[in-house]
Length: 220
Image (cartoon, rainbow, N blue to C red; front, side, top):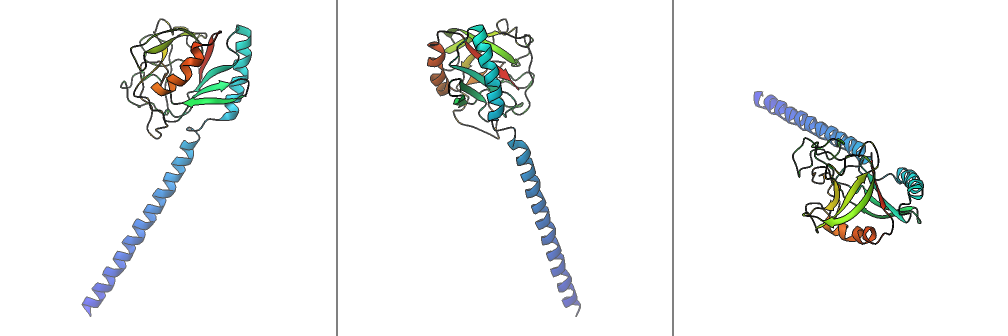
């Protein structure tokens, strides 16, 4: 009789434990889905925002006699493991190319992705941060990085006026992926916008053959 009572109690305890872990697992899944939904808004380009920026960029390019066929828009509000570097076709009012792009590590370890979803920005020399604002892509020169091509970046705003003195340039870097790496981030350097070698091979001929300066606008 006692054995039957103990056996029944044991079975009830096992059922209770199974229900507990089952409910806990369900709650975890729900929580994970919630996190995914929140994060999703930070990994996709908002075409409406890009169109508004592109319209302003075109007005700027016309006024300053920059290239009015295309510009480069970099939306730093997007997670660094997703594509946030956009070559915008003014005539088609659309994205022609999109790439991954790295930002500055600031006080975080170099070549890691510590600030992949929350980068800081600075115009201060030695900060190792990227700067926001409009840049003119200037001289094409030799780079020690990537496919050995870089473009000098001239800061056009108060937020990026020290770009040249900080040696901030646009170049490729072999550690940057051709494809999206989210939820991981793109490796972070010392402030330069860096794209993959193959991406540079695509965009370099467009910049190189442009008869007018090309606008790069980094914003968030």
